[in-house]
Image 1 (tube, rainbow, N blue to C red):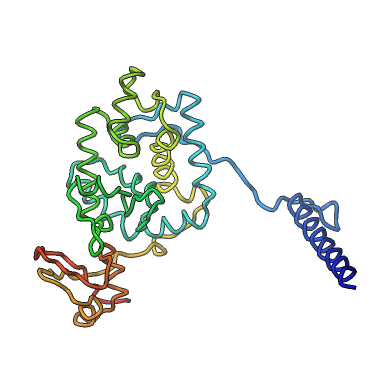
Image 2: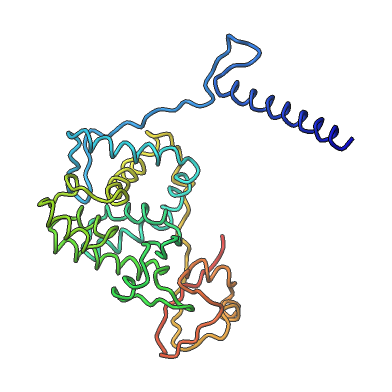
Length: 305
């Protein structure tokens, strides 16, 4: 009896699965009860390449087939991240102006904004390799460039400080290689790796150099973001300016000693720990020991309208 019941149940599930699978493939190929009504479920097109492109004022040699294919690959992938790219475009309203301002102040081309987009999607990201924050610094590199990394404070999540630290790296790379493109590539794979490849390949041009796959795609990904985000409507992203997120209005409160509880601090400033954390992702604990009595600038939101 149990065996019969099991057989009956298995037959039922198989039949349901077949019907659902059949229905799925029928809808995929546009087949239904009306054979004359065959429509694709989605109109997939290859994104159009720009007539010309550059990164940080340095021309992308689109006359070469491998360069065209590499850029189109990244544009195709990014263009069909419908929800993710829409969210990035919305976030750009909040953070793009801030990042571009720091890049200008530091003497770094503003196209490096799109490198930040490629690194973290403008979010406080964390990778399996241990890279963290908006610019995806590893712990050691972050410390080398002046960022505090600890259990209570991690400045890889501080927009201003992390961006300025990244700028130091980019300028060092540019001074070394004489090209912003290769400086950007070195941020992904490290200067030692780039030095080695220049040595045994006798090439110092990013677009001609054989590189690890992730690095070989890295600058193309930034150029693809730049191309699509500068012309979102052309690529099917009809996001109005008013739909982009606005910068959060904040006041700056200097903290020079310990904070026993950030929630109490928030209440003292008519806010909440949630909002304090949203504006200060570098706060990684519910307290601040601050044994060295450093000065921290805490952004306190002045409203939630």
